[in-house]
Image (cartoon, rainbow, N blue to C red; front, side):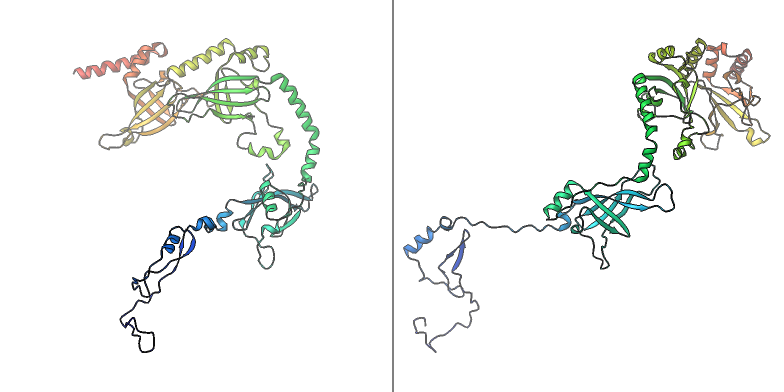
Length: 503
């Protein structure tokens, strides 16, 4: 059948064939197109008679298109980067101002308010920030939040091509004048083919110029006085050692008085595991007002009026006296010592800092010695409440007396069978005697507490019925501080308790 001529009627096709794929004769090698002789016919039928000559085989084996055309450079497609990522954190910054019209004011007709205009390239949004001016009493800061702003009635947003120097920008009825820009904005706009105008200076506020001219002579006088002070008192500091009682224990501080400008700085002396944050500065260097009608409650409002500010009396170096208390912002500090320079300066300039008398110095040492030696020592007494109510008479209390600062605290002991814990009845405080005068109070002392004594704390009467072992030991070691009837009461109580135990 294959040798018959290809005439009509002499050709018979295989009806069972389903594959009619034409073999490929063109191919690529190393990026170049080459001709390949197929080994199979249509439908992947094998053709054994197809063979190559020796020249054709040698040509195919030695064919290297790189030697003729060179290596093919395959260009990789560029990666797609969205605009929000390409322009991320790229911001155009312009500097300008706007005028605020002031009506019915004899001092000014308008104000110059400086702003910074931010243009975000990633989404064509604009934000306007007003540069704040201290003590101006104006709403400043973020003036227009970041969003797209329309430039016409067709709601077309502003584009970076619409921004240039020395032009007006109308946003929500306010005219902003663009005067200058930063270096990045200038370089970016010039790279995009925008020709920037020359920058212009922002005009000064006329009201501020009037104030500067009015106070120019006053400022000159102040500068001259400061120069004179700098030559005499520059670098001279008075250093005082002080204590402050916060009802828990004494805290030690260093108070530094700068003679150049009478400013005060307070530093705290920290100890290990004292429970406070290790911050070195307790009060930053500043002027401190005295206790006067201008106290700390109205101190903030004083700077609104210059005339009221001049009436403030500030603490000076001559207000610090050893052995005395000084109040700084409602905190009472006790001055117990100073350094050598402060003592020498006191002797040379007695008007600034009075010298310390021997009696005052002994008093200071006694107070400091008492607070240090008795910091952790307390006297505990058991007492009952004297009341007409039968339930109150059954209550038991613990009176704690601190020897370091004469502070007293009262705790209520739990009753048997109730299961409650000890409760605080009275906060730690110095308690005056009920028969003392309020202007000259007489506070309770350890000599006032003994077995059978009656004490009154703020209209509550207590009767002492017992004491701990440390109270007895303290009285025996310090008999010169107690009267004889106090010592006898404790001795009788000890004898009675011993007899009861022996019986």
